[in-house]
Image (cartoon, rainbow, N blue to C red; front, side):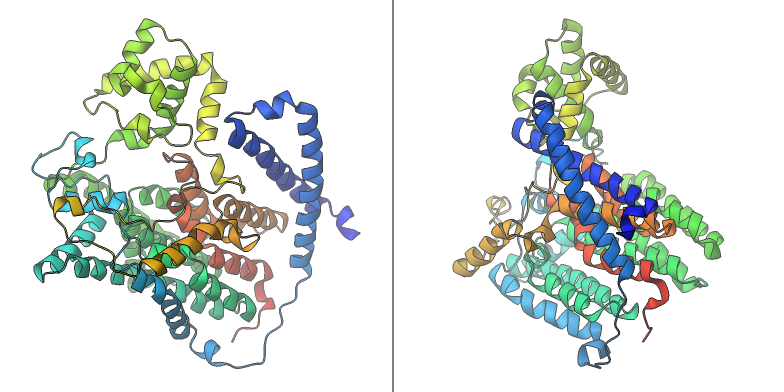
Length: 543
């Protein structure tokens, strides 16, 4: 009953409950109709649903808040082998339980993106080279995909080719990626032990890492996002560690932090935005090492500029096409064209940029690639300015269509009843057609079983939510709300990288695309552990 009179707790829970309820109501409408018509046409039912959901969520949130408030950690007196060697045992368990996937999907799972990267590395014509105005047509590598990942993947395949086995070369890459991801996950469990996270939660996290199929399947998927995700997990842990501990940064720490930031940028182009938008918050809150952290940030910015404007151009590597940053406006234009009549002038301006011949037919509400794929790579800056001039005019004419276009392309990242674009497991023949001897082994039955488990996992009641993008976003929102309620605003800083990843998802070309959200989903066991440690402070007995 005391919770009823706790104004701060009530306000926090009420705001979050309202947000959750609105996301459910509007998300359902967009999933069914592609717009908000169900909400407004059935406004009485919508209001009733809002009240019911609000009441339900508010009760649940207040209950969880109370559990956290009252929780007193019990330090186990049992000294076991796991607590003595948390990293070694964790990585051993993870690798052993991943072994069926490693064997069954030998040498690697190639999806379209890594296949095209291999084509780029070996100078084979590919769509990403076609999409750009090349600096040097003889250099087929572009920075659409991070160059360092393309070089790593291609070099491993080349080494395998030199010793007579393309499969062995791809498996070399898989081993590198598996060891990186498993080591980072094991290190999070080691750190949980270090901050005295309850033993049961650590065991639960170990089981999640080891048994939930998204982890081993992505460990075997040669996509750039896996190594990038590992780096983001370390970045989140770094921010928390610096916030919680007053560390006098030495030269080795400065170099280590700078290296991590540089690797984040090298392994994914939008890694720059994640660091750019999150690191300043660390600067503002971690005053002990302000000058040293500022130096790191300046060096990071200098490297990023030099890399993109000096290093890559010197090797004739073409930058990523500007179309990759324009998913939102292009998708809005396509939907506007589909449902509105254009003037002759509008048609001509849009046609210079996006090819109007079949734009309305190319519009797919939850993926902008068909629209972007016919972007005119020879579009001038002046033509882009004209495009945005008319884009803005049409926004004022029909803002609802623009909103619908964006929500349809993004709502799954905040709506927990949407699952899409989840895992890779299929055999991709793109490089086989170019003469590479890449093939799965004969263990088709085990691949079918494991991929089948991977496909059904998101739909398993309760535990399937572990891999649900919207649900993980809701956890982020819950943790943030509780920290605000407890006036522990400094703790929000370590959550900011996850929020920036979410913003990148919103600007991405695909709705509910798992690997775009993967960094904060894979980091969630650690994120929750750090949250527990932060809100409970010194209640844990250090070991």
